[in-house]
Image 1: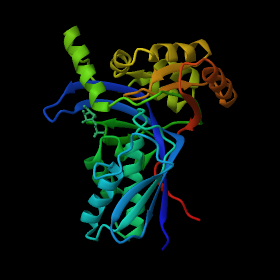
Image 2: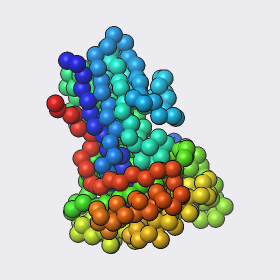
Image 3: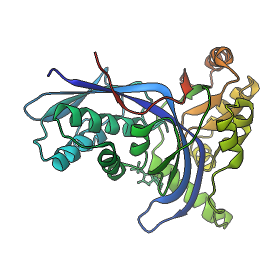
Image 4: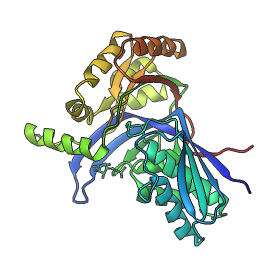
Length: 301
Ligand code: C5P
């Protein structure tokens, strides 16, 4: 076998409600994810040892032992009882440290690709369990579609979503560290001296998804990490304002940022919005995508 390639989507958070910091350092969440059509590809090829490399080598991705895809492959080998022998090659389209779960996507891709390459025989539930050990967003990268994540985001329930939503993403120069954004969230909350509200899934959001209603979805988008991301990267205020000015139905920081997501009225409006944002000088580059899309899938020739 010459290799197995898996395609894995990025995510946008439609609702990210953050609760208290737990004893294990994580925060309880209500996290409504949607998988969008920006994909990384992870190829696992037979090799004597194990290693990871990146096509075109974008900055900021470790290729040593702390690479999450490599850790995923090692974990899978251990569970499947096989020798971890594979060369992983990652073709990245998802922004690095951008709040779109690119590292988690690569880990999910490595799990699926290595399970196939090594004939590991692990079932989707087993892979989901391993995914949760690797990171809070990894299980969703396997599942895709639209889903609510509880716990630290790893306990998933699919959500009914009709039709296709059109998104524009404003990519920023440089990333933001997720732990740092959560840390800033804790700091801001302590300063306000307010306990987090009870975590519940937004009824408006769920209804908008069920009805495929982008006009209702826009105002229902929310992200509790947004003030923390803005506090660390004040320039994102201008980026968000530019999207709203150009008619986005919703403008929001993606997860822990710094990517900003804009919900467009239609595919046509997304093209227009992308052109305008790109010309307004408020971001490094723009990307268009639609959602929901399926999670990690093996690409058959
Ligand atoms: O799970 P993952 O390794 O992706 O999380 C990265 C970091 O983000 C954690 O170390 C933690 O600081 C923060 N985090 C959190 N609560 C969550 C998810 C992530 O505090 N539910």
